[in-house]
Image (cartoon, rainbow, N blue to C red):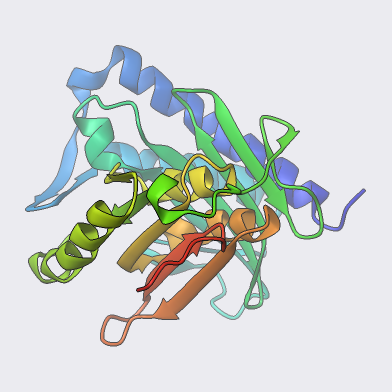
Amino acid sequence: MSTYSQHLSVAREAALAAGELLRDQALHHQHELVVDAAEAHDIKLELDRRCQSLIEKILLRSFPDFAIYGEEGISGDPNAEYQWIIDPIDGTVNFFYGIPHFAISIALRHKKEIVVGVILDPMRNELWEASRGEAVTLNGHPLHVSRRTKLSESIVSVGLSKTAATIEQAAPEFLKMVRSVRKCRLMGSATLDIAYVACGRLDAYIENQISLWDIAAGLIMVEMAGGIVELKPHATEPDKYSIVASSGLLPLDL
């Protein structure tokens, strides 16, 4: 049994329970969605909070002393050695518009290191899992980043953040990628973009302002699948980062 097998098992249980809730809502109750807040480039749903509560309940039942870190900040002991990092619905706008491309992300951080990651796409029944020192898997099968070495043959996803300023900043980067790669994608879920890098569907994911809960689970997956993650704290926004997650084999001149 690995060091983090129990933690991974509980994270999987929480993700699957939340996934069942989201899938049921998407398939049968889409018209009942309650919007908590609507912004120019984002939507917050009551379902986000309900899904978060369900995940927290399952995680804290087994690990009551662990802190929870997410969009609402840190709950529990902020000095706890272990913190669950949760995004209950990454791709909320997709979900709201009936686009079946969103995911649940659960990661565990021990001190400053991500040691467990679980990502679930409930609409495709795809479950990515990773724990430090073990193989990263997709539905139980080991995976690896892309082995493509030519930028002209690659597919790169560029994330555009939720403010006018960050969109303006990212637009030139997007145009540069469009001209250099085979295809450039804006898919609406950073969590799934990074999971796709880990399993070789995408060659890289790039965003200049992203929250840790969007990417935490994917970080360990890309690294353990043979890729490289460059994560830098944002210069002016606290708790925000710029990220380049890639196979490490492409000449990304950023």
